[in-house]
Length: 347
Image (cartoon, rainbow, N blue to C red; front, top):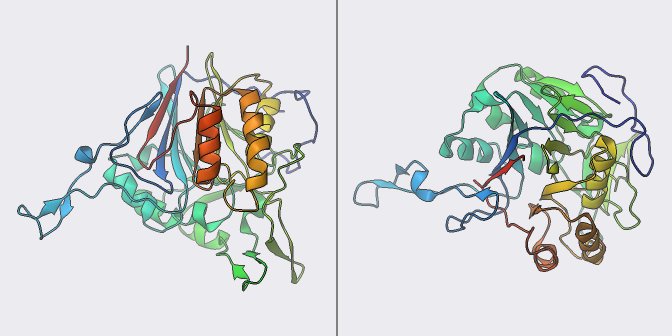
């Protein structure tokens, strides 16, 4: 099931259990996941487990005339969006992926500068799905890198026109990503429905995720424009995840919003690779709001069953789900914050 960049577009086969021909995901010695954009920033949050927090004192000062020396600390920018920088190391070789870009044109780029990161390290950009809170910072990437011809890996449905049509509220059309605009800025778009192995086989992009649980049904009241009319689009099929295997520990799975279902995503990654251990699950699990609260308990129960060593519910997970996850898996739960780097080394 190894796939090349130019492989035939097709939906991944549906099925339970281990894949007949598992994808060989090369184990890495270390992976570092750095949060560039998330919904919160806490300058006083301490290190815990694999989480290393950015210190205010290390962030460059900015001009502020109201202070005696005309300078002040700013911290980092938090916004309702998600973006991470993922760096793998195997032996003496390192590779870096930008996974999602946040919601605003400037947030990700601002945090990149303040954290002192090198945008020249980015080798490929991956979008978890087409929603604007994960794609809005692409213009900031051009500011960081210029017109550099970076590959941009997306699902073909990422360009879909969409809206939210909530009961008793005006329909809210979401910003639609423009392929031509991204290509004009120098990004080389690569569309894939199937899984893709990137960067010497050390990073797997899942492509479409198998929907196998009986409780994860996607986003209600979400619609797509098809054939001249709005149609229900709860499944958001372009949702995909990033997967790394840490030597001797298992899979590290990174989600954007988790519209495919956080449990579906984790199980799909395990099935695709044939790896039997989930070491870490990080990202948005989309469990916030009244429509999703009924599935918090079965989701938490599934997490308990999978028993990851690191569990980081971020972005759209919601405080109620975070509290339940923290109570049910206190040794695995780690709260996220902008600027946090999760350093996970193999054995």
